[in-house]
Image 1 (cartoon, one colour):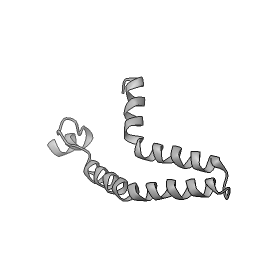
Image 2 (cartoon, rainbow, N blue to C red; image 1 turned 90 degrees about the horizontal axis):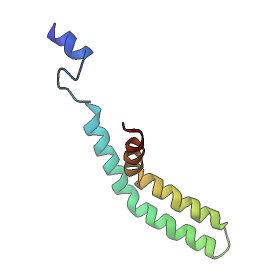
Image 3 (tube, helix red, strand yellow; image 1 turned 45 degrees about the horizontal axis):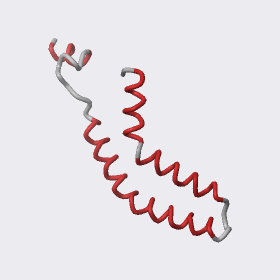
Length: 85
């Protein structure tokens, strides 16, 4: 009976999501690997834009994309705070 109640109401069993630790670890590992790649990408796209090989909006898009990837946790926290979740 306790197992059934615990599986239906995980808050009563004081259980946490088993994927939380793995997802947090994967997220931090991915960001650690992408940090040098992001720096190199900004330098490469900046040089290509400087020499007129690509449009400057590619550089702006690259920087905005990097901000969204690395700032996703803060953005989600901010939006959740706006709605009181």
